[in-house]
Amino acid sequence: MRIRRMLAALIAGACVIAVAGCSGESDADPEPTFTPSATAEPPTASQSAEQPVEPVPPAEMERDDEVGAKAFAEFYWEVVNYAQATGDTELLKTLEMPLCSACRGVRTWIDGVYEGAGRIVGSEQTVRVSTVVALGDSKSSQLIGYDVEARLTAGPGKVVNRKGQIVARSGEADQMVVVSVSNEADQGWRVGGWEEQQ
Image (cartoon, rainbow, N blue to C red):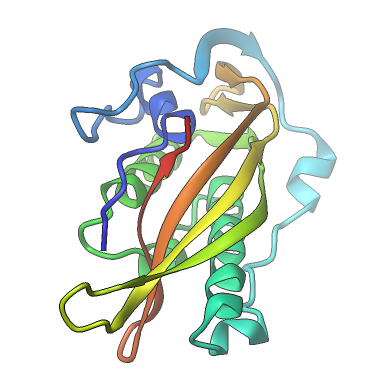
C-alpha cells in the first residue's frame, strides 16, 4: 500500500509550539497552521464541566469492504478530535500502522502539548467521504486496502499553556485528503498514511 506523506494542516502546528517537537518527513509542507500568540485565557466553568466521551467504533467497521473503510476513516478523525480535546492518545495509537509517520506526527504533537500541561481548544475535524477505491496487489490481485478520498474541514483552534496563555492559534482549513486504510485480521482497521490532494 502507498504510504502517504504528512498532512501539513495538522502537523505544521508542532513546529511553532515550544512544548511539542517538530518532527516528520522531509517532504512535508513547511507552512505553519498555528501562529504564536500570548493572550491570557483563564479556563471557564463550561470547559471544566464538559468532558468528551471516547468514540465508539460504529457497527459498519465490522465489514471488510468499502462501507467498512468509509466508516473507519470517519471514526479515525473522531478519535483525533477526542485525543486533541483530552490529551488521551491511547486509542489513537491503536489505529495507526507502524510506518504511518503522519499518524505518529499528529499523536506526538498532541502528547507534547499535554505533557507540557497545555491543552488544545477547538480545531475539530469533520470528514465528508466522497469516494472509496479498493487497492489490490498487482501480482496476486489480492485486496490489500482502500484509498478513502474525503473533504477534511478543521475549525479554528488554539493551544493554551499551563498559565492559561494562548501560545498558538489556527484558522479554519478545508482540503481534500486521501487516507490509505486496511483491515488486517489480527489488528482490525488501521491507517497507513494520508496526503493532501492538490
